[in-house]
Image 1 (spheres, rainbow, N blue to C red):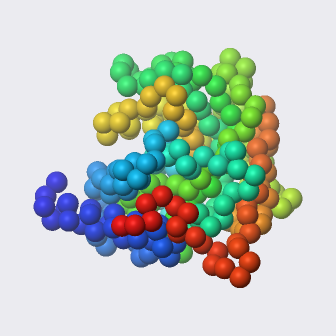
Image 2: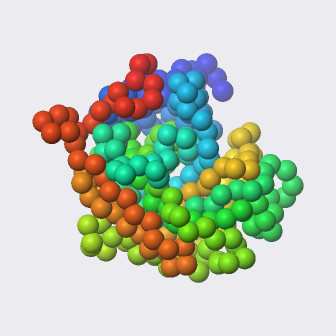
Length: 282
């Protein structure tokens, strides 16, 4: 990477980090990093992740984005991407999802895999990836964008950690001997109204295909998947906007139900609290 590219990568990371810490969305970063060089976009992502780790966060897994045709159409992209999951993104144990940690959230339902073995060596083929899965659960991913109005192209969302936000995991754990991810049927509601439906085959043909794609990409970028990590395999249907005070529920057939409720903004205060996020100081 040239010196000029490194400067543009650093400037893009700074723009996104300022948006994250201020909870004020920014302009797209494609003016800085272009739209074609994915290595440059992932370099921006890695700077943001490293800042979070330096501030005390811990990497706990990955998420795969834009795996369904419906989401690709919503975002205006034509291929999947991946982001990094940090420990404080998991809000499963929270009674309320803290809306102040988000800027312009959307929700999507998907299958999450817990890995029982590394995916670092070998062919990373279907059999190896399948055998690495310890169990799966239903999940709701709360995606978010630091870019104003979700005005993103592919390089923008990659740089912005694949538009990662928060996530919630269900409690029903099934092994791959007990169910087939491709056969999952999903319905997601917001405040009792159905906002998204889909099935396992909408996720790159099978959520296990998404896992295999991720395993190869993660190794290519020098950070292979490890035992104990969680993988959010991608949306099974369209994403939907989330609002303060909303209740979101997703039913994923054999994996059961997962539900979340968003908090309301503090009375008389701003809807966002950047100080609640890691690394409030640049």
